[in-house]
Length: 187
Image (cartoon, rainbow, N blue to C red):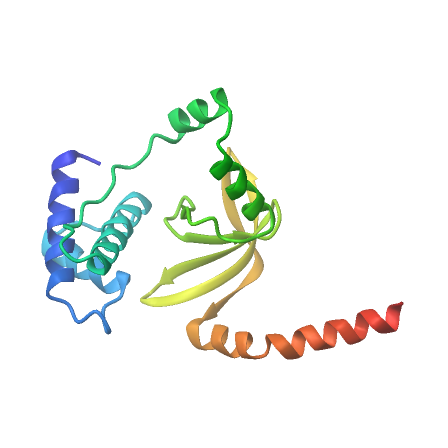
């Protein structure tokens, strides 16, 4: 993405956010309004990722009074991975690895190739993501496969709306209880 395009998108997104009702505004709406204003289709993964980054930086800056929002430049992943591999991990990095192994969030946000937020990896091939589809936020629990070096979603999985996720979450204790009962019968 050209630096001038990045600057125009960032400026437009920030203008939209500053005048928006934050209780009603969604990332999809911001992207749609900015697309219409700029005449650029911002639904491509790179644009989607950049808009999300600007929105998150804006939201973080509103939590800290007096701080002006500035999105971080996109990291050069190959360079970062090479540099990280050449040095010993710090204690903090080791703790993050342990937390990731346990399936907990390490505070570092990870996005897939489509710009969707990866909440956690359940295994090598399964993950939980949050995505925006036609203006609706979905929790997707899906199996992925590798093709030409990319991780692609398979048809094996489920995407839940916010309402469905809420209903599922409410019933987790009943599910856990049923699992315990089944396991005790098997022993």
